[in-house]
Image 1 (cartoon, rainbow over the protein chains, first blue to last red):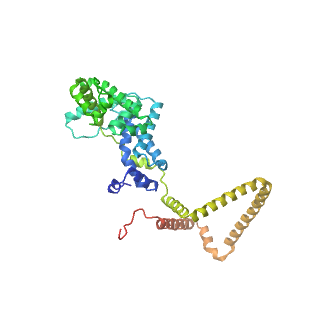
Image 2: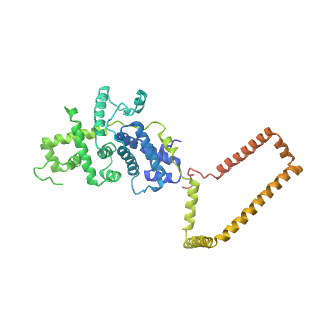
Image 3: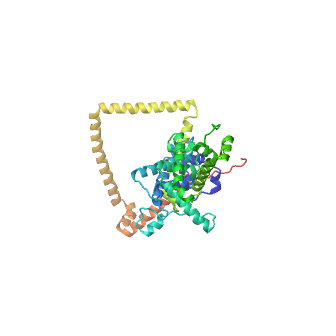
Length: 201
Length: 202
């Protein structure tokens, strides 16, 4: 069942949560619609495997929506869902360490079809073919450099510079002191600068 | 923060520069210090590069897959509970009544548990008697039903239906359809409206 847009556009996340708590299915779908892309993008860049990221994203939403009664509206819904997602990714990474990024597909894919199915889909932007090649090259290098960071640095840098979250919210999501978050982001940028230095030359 | 003489931009100041909130004296330093300017520009390139990473989305049907595993609370049960809560806490009198009833209920439960623990033999005797009586009543009812069905002339239709398996199947299907139809109609009649209705004068 698709949710009609104008009905939801003026509502805050907290208001949509209240409607979900009253048993309105379309409110659940609206929460998924608002956060499926950012949560999936964060998880994909954390675990670097499309299928696994889908599973973790699904697990994140199922866990959050089934526990919607325990969500406290004085906190941002985005912080809550990112926290659940990030914990799922960190738990997974602790269990199984992944160390190679592949834009061409999952490192665990065994057939060409599986490689194709798990490949990162680059979104279309308004660029010339040359720009696209350069952007892909730079984007690929940045993705690879982010993939080589420690998981904690990776979460911080993605939340800060991909999702545009303020430091305070990142500290809340990751359950870290504000100073630690700032340090992690600076260190992560330092490591990225070193990893991408060859592109400048 | 005022810049101490001879110092270069710290990561915090570079952050401020990236967000366009760098203090004036630091900005003056940045305009003159090639090392700081180069560092800040490199950081901006990295940050811009990260922000321009491609948008990625999960495969189509993601929300359906999530919703298949989500238990949505029953709105009728929630509204009934909320209405009961509102009624209970509406006045001091209703709260006192609810508290008294709760105490009475808890007291009788505690009394019942205490009595059961001290009279276990009596309970066992009552259980045995009820079991034997229950068995007799069930057997007598079954016999009465069977003899009625066999002997009474007004059950002739049912007897002929039991003789023909096809008729029996058709009759059962018809009865089930009527029952299900009735349930669906009842559900529709009892469903609460999901959309707010515009009222005149609002």
